[in-house]
Image (cartoon, rainbow, N blue to C red; front, side, top):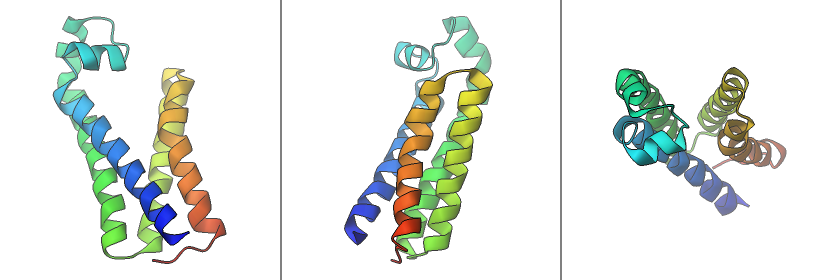
Length: 122
């Protein structure tokens, strides 16, 4: 079970590194515009600084999860997974796109439940 949880934590971190990459480097590119359903390239250009800031936060979440594995801290991991769950819920609610909940919150919720119910300690 320990290795399964570490793998899940790592996958959630990789997912957030990918979000960071999309938001910081691909926001104005066709892939970024399509991924986020942006209305135009001009809109993407106008909002790229905000998107890069958002991407940086996703990077911090990913680094926090990796850090929790490295220092073997269950509480740090729970903190960052909880932040991800809340961010996904807020994002889905504020944008009215339920897909955000499934992409961001659900993997973190599953990992959080495993850590909580199996009292996983590194």
